[in-house]
Length: 212
Image (cartoon, one colour):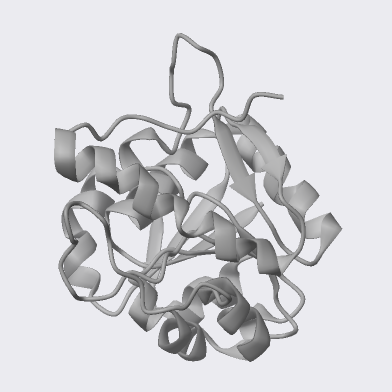
């Protein structure tokens, strides 16, 4: 499967390397190709192009940019290149204001989410929230003595969630499907909770586990 990743930061690079590790063909979309020079040197089989190039190339799209520019990045990728495709939304609506006692600030309200805004703006794309509640260092095949950690996902299209679930299984996660897009209102704030331990204790390798 061809994977198009919109973004060029550490999350995008980590997921690109993870997809390549598991046998996928990957193209990174960026506005600044020079930012990826070292990454491409280290990973020569991963292609680089514009946001639109990556989206057009993709059978499955990953959005991994700063939350405040997520909508504009998808606009540059092109709605026609995203239509009918599964899109993994790895973003969180983190505002530019600094954390308060380790608690991030969001630009969304309690009864809203970034993913809902994006799904509304691009209704022909099948958004699935994933990778938003853990740091990049642990996104691909994390190893914990307690077993597989939980990845919380949501989205309106069940087939898209099954497709993402297969990827998450390859990447070493236990999938917890929280339902439709509105569940992103609960999943996105897990980023806040995850980061408190990081900011206050300088511990950045933890993950969530749902016990049934």
